[in-house]
Image 1 (cartoon, rainbow, N blue to C red):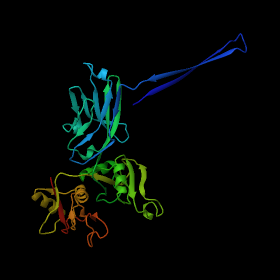
Image 2 (cartoon, rainbow, N blue to C red; image 1 turned 135 degrees about the horizontal axis):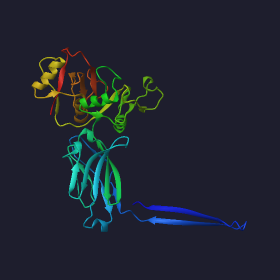
Image 3 (cartoon, one colour; image 1 turned 90 degrees about the vertical axis):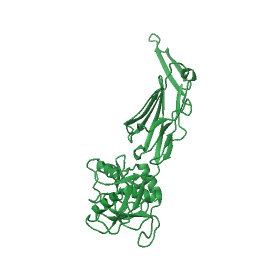
Image 4 (cartoon, rainbow, N blue to C red; image 1 turned 135 degrees about the vertical axis):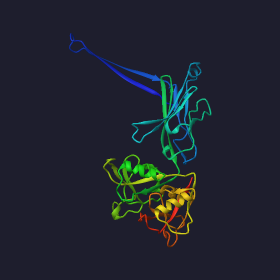
Length: 351
């Protein structure tokens, strides 16, 4: 519970100009105490973990003056917003007051209050998307009283580095965001990259993150990557010009609802033939994020290079072996071959 204590020191000085040595000082200390506020918001946990396509309940409860709450005209307003990375902007998610309820934007039809008890303001989010990841603020307003609490929604998934056909260091921030989105992903946050580094991600090329910073994770220090004698960690270039800065990007993806597979075909394919082959099979050519999700979350393993939607060729190895990926489980990157080469198969995705 919150308690307020004010200490006021008031000094009065009065000098008797008719008596040279008769100066009086009056000091009074006034203590003002305020009892517990009539409204207090609390959360049972500050982080909730879910996955794309799943549901999550963001906990929030409020305690309030029972006398005030019981009055016939009493209406408590509950508002949920999503916080941006710089805290300067909030995105409306859900508002409830009495019988009136409203959800906003992409949350429409997917959010509601749990209402397990009279003081329960917990928010339920259904059919979670990648964009739902982030920090949410629960605000409860009761007349002139209000209080807030913040809960983070984290997602199970994988972070991966990405660069375009043009080569490394070719994205500004906005292009990086679009590139991740085009590959069924979102641009990763620092927390997501940090967790990936702790899980062993090592990448020597700097990439954009969602807060506009440029960083890269190093688990094995070496000369080209900050120095051989440096400690492992996430190297930080700081915040860069989002329009003029040119770097790679770190993307994040999670579970998907569908089937990722290597298409069995009698011949190798050009890129255009690969796209058409997936369509003929009732699917679409798979995206890079879908391959990473299938590899990391489903253990998908295939030692055949195949075209993907961005015209790159890759293959996922969950069980390291000679001629495939002898030393580590990884998504192996073949490159961006000439689209007219009939050297590869194709990976498809069927929703």
